[in-house]
Length: 592
Image (spheres, rainbow, N blue to C red):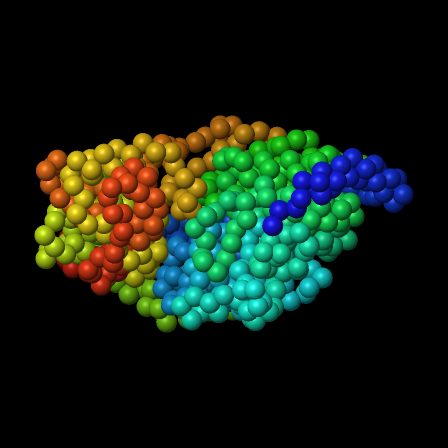
């Protein structure tokens, strides 16, 4: 429920008065000493906590990460620096450790909980996309980080759990969304709570760091509309118009800085800009750090003299490291940033200790859990041997195109049902395959890194050839929607403002370096030449069937756009595993 226009006007009219109060507060408290900060940022980990087996350079796992953070905490304490750690969401969906369990995240979440130093985490669209995962997070993961009610660390400013009018959580497929009547987040008047919802985490927190610095922290997600049915993501603009945000902004007058981990693409308007503008209405000069995610890029921009935004890649391939000083006059100065590749060598160098002293008991424990879970899931089992490298970001008709292999070979040989009378035609979105297939041994985990979603297949039947031709033109030319999945791209950096440096460990790049991921088509499809007088069955993952249904209904109103389960027992994940085992067998040319 949105606040009334008059109430909203009244609140924002208070912003001017509040700014005067801020000036009064600064004068009353007197001048504070300069304070240095070091911030570590991770985002879009997607299950990659066990290093990168096909990239021997990126050899640091989460045991090494935990060790690094322990050393940094001691080092920063000795130097009088505030050390902060933010995670901008999408912890799951990308590896076997994350997704081979019955519930996505079942083995990942306990390991994340062992990382001692999180200042705050927020939720990504993959985290909120499955009922079973959300239910698990509400039972264990979110309460773990929010067990100290005065200093909660899992923040979801605009992501909510749905409740029935009786106060009992909604149920889907027998899975409980949360404990009956219990709200994980605070019930704030004027928010979506009045619509029978409760914040999945807390909407904001006012924290005091190890050096005594006070900070307001919020956590946002972009305007995602494909969340699990037991949840709701409120549009950012509506969410900022609620009483909770006004209260948070009032609390921020008692803080030296405002930090916002957000699962929001900083290059795609308007959500990030809305958050920043709303904060600036109340706090025109207070230091602000926005920690973005979702686009899987390394992105940097300075928004004004006292504010920055950073996104720190994907798959734990790098961590963002930002350092700055908040001066006694409240300004941000000495701003610098790096993206540090996740190598043990880099982590040891950052830690300030020797390689022999680097791995801590906690690091050892986490490495042991990773090994135990990997063995339990048989992730190292060999399925076959690939004769070459295939990439999901290669041109579709290139010899190393993973999508062409998948659509032209994998699907027809494993999924297509030859008993059906119509011509089978496959369509896939261009973010379905998440990682390359490397030359050499192919393990169970490799399958999960490429196709982690376990999508079942659906189909639209009896599509006339003339209609299919027109439909392919429609989906090829329609603008991309914010539906969630981000296409794979190898390594992208975008630097909009060079203030702060940014060359990580000797690397150098131009102020703006981009790739062609914005130019990717929305969908790939079968090579089959569509005949005008032919009749086709459109086969696709359920994810695509859901999204393309409104497109079919809008453009072809006379067609019955109802899809049904395709007659196969395979999923998008098992189809690839089956193909590798049957067609990429070990041989003298490709030995196992």
